[in-house]
Image 1 (cartoon, one colour):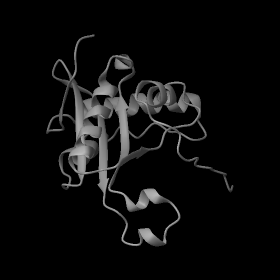
Image 2: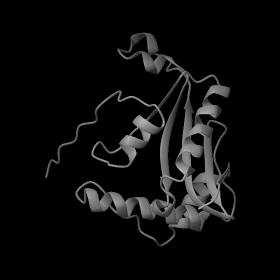
Image 3: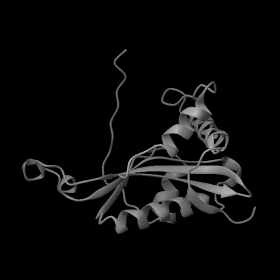
Image 4: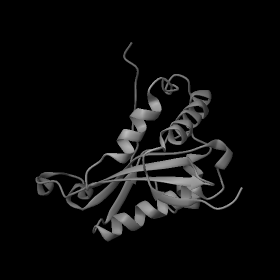
Length: 167
């Protein structure tokens, strides 16, 4: 499969990142169709490219490039300590921290190092900015994401998100 270059997102990455996003969505829709959908293809590459290329200084957008094609991406945000942190119950809101908004890699490149490279780059970015914590959400029943984060990346389960359909 070859090596991946982790680099800043740039103009022209839209088709590659949209392919990774839709491919990941298809996988999760197969696992849990009640919770996941495949994003509409029309305009998706432009929308994603704009999100990844045009962002502020508190956002990081990187792609995993394989032989000139973006085959995965990560989008993360730096969060300053909350102004009312001393009034909150959880300590994490009082810390400078990073939240990973999205990580997607084409299935053909899973277990090839792209996701690891992207996440390691986010961790470095966070440390450089003084972050003391990195958080993200993952589908609890994922046979891919959960082992990747727990076993491959050394993350620990921190919270549980509950959901209940009201219709």
